[in-house]
Image (tube, helix red, strand yellow):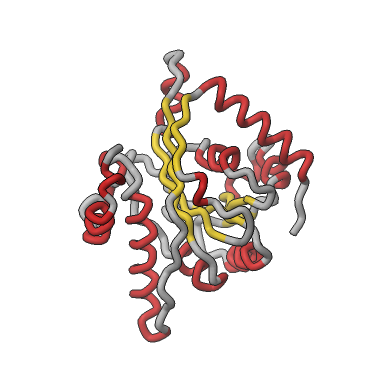
Length: 231
């Protein structure tokens, strides 16, 4: 697994400094990030700074993520993605090459960040997730660490009014999805995708739970983990 430790360290230090200067960050659950071994970091997607926020919180040098290839032509983006060994993915259609690269990265022991929703939410709440993360977890046989992020969608508006935005990021406990049954694979993928999203939703303030707000599984999680409601 290729790494660029010096450039990665510089990039992390610069981004961390900017976050410290411009925002207030409430972080919980960092102890749930393993010191070694592979896992998928599955996070909701509110704003452009979600990925950098996760990057500065996770100290491991083998953390990377999937990046929409629409950013390939943006200034600086290709360089930064290269520094963190990011994997480009076509979000508009199935991308087997990216999925194979992601699977191989995980099988080599790395941490891979993915947004199950596939794109940023423009509603403020969770939007229906795609089944790609559940499928990847099955193919790579790795656990999933749910991550809940709130406040990043307001960052630029808050800064434009000379206010330091309050950001929240919570790392949940790692869990494994049940295996898929070949004859019921589509149903199994959807069930597992809902499990991922409901675990994320359980760590979010109620106004961010979106389309999963009334999901039965979310209600079960909230009932068994009362502290998740104390947001």
